[in-house]
Image 1 (cartoon, rainbow, N blue to C red):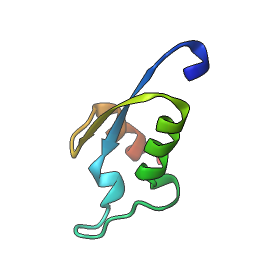
Image 2 (cartoon, rainbow, N blue to C red):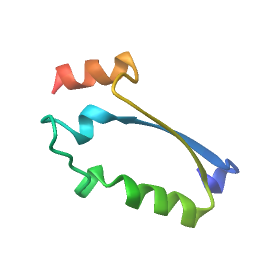
Image 3 (tube, rainbow, N blue to C red):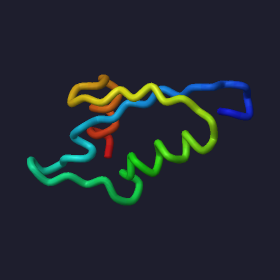
Length: 66
């Protein structure tokens, strides 16, 4: 994205992706939000972070298809 001239990335953070079981949080592996934010920072990208339990209908459809 940076190489195409963009300076920001918008990303949803679905809370149920990190807390599949109530009270048990998982930020490891492909769920490592801190690592993602650090990579964006190192690349020079700004991040518009959109956390929340209800982010979009597309997320629910993807979960149903799995």
